[in-house]
Image 1: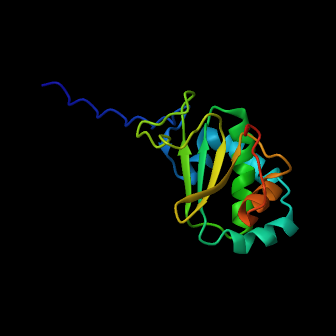
Image 2: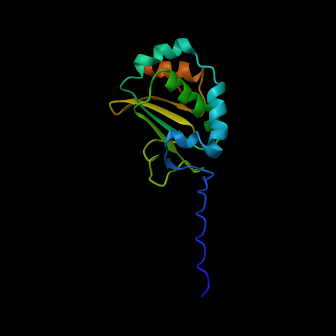
Image 3: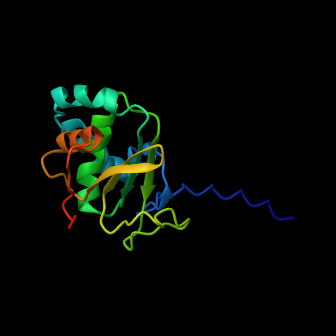
Length: 160
């Protein structure tokens, strides 16, 4: 009788070139995505004075990050944004949603959120949107966040 065939080696899971849907931050910090996320996180110098002002304002605020792992602006701003959140101690109520090039997700998580460009960083409290940063900040991520969270007038880059 023929010798039994050796079991096939399990395939190494391939990381997709693009993430879509609800995503864990860890997914951005590993593999292909980590090659751009980690250096950009490390090299960003946060504005410590502004971050100290953000700390109390971020309590009870929900943050949704819509970004594309294929998008240059998302690759630049998302690691910086996470570094600011980390420095402010904001680890709760942060949702990361990755979209395809059409700005959609398989689950339709973008529906009703008016996502036209990425990254879009949405800040809300008790279900009410306080403001959003779209594609890139006007002054800096920290200063734009401060304006939004203090209720100062703020228009993102594409607001009318």
